[in-house]
Length: 320
Image (cartoon, rainbow, N blue to C red; front, side, top):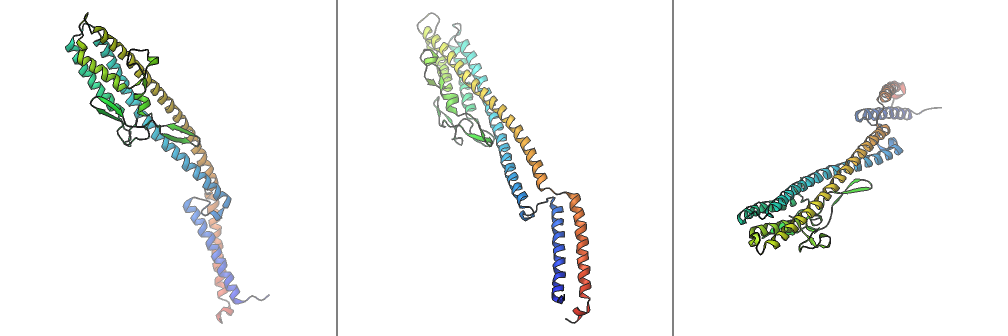
């Protein structure tokens, strides 16, 4: 069979290009450390790598959400601890002031301290996280949730509770809104049984105590006014206990959430390790095999080049 010189020339160039393409591809694999550089290298493997990378990205986002959750819940826990400590001090002062041996000036001094605690509790209720978001504002976490107007604290947040995704099927609340935490206490403001009481706020409880002690209600042991005063003080102690119980319950729920997200964080970390292993097995390069292949392809390219050079030297080409 006769082979045209142009055909031989084309076949020689094609052989060199093919060997050069294979060599460049292997060199690219070695430089990236990846077996699959383009989808055409392994369509099924490339699709699997895409799915694995998407799963990895989602899980890493869950881990980021967990970091945000832990930080927010820990700050909230600290704020509530501070309020508990403050309320316990207020309770101690209430018991002291309820003693008939205290006179008006002593009760006025206690009133001043309780006013400081009132301001402190309001400040703790307006605590922000690391992003400047108010912990107890609900969904409206960019505006100050509690506003003190002439001793009356108003709630300007909402009753929402923000949730963050920590796994494909699980969400956890990042905080507690201020209404449920501070404004919706089932206390008693009229001496009735707390079980039949109406909602009231921590701020109103402390403020009523402060005003009562400031006015002293004309209390002198054994005269008119003493009975009403003591009833008010006893009721206030009961309301403080309700407030303490409410906050302690919320702290318990925060602890449960922290435990839950820690468990999920560990599960996510294990899953990321599994994904990394599967991803590596699917797309990572076998360096020994690739280096051996590179050497063979270099030899093949050299052979193609040498063959083409000899073909160019044939007399027939000299007459082109």
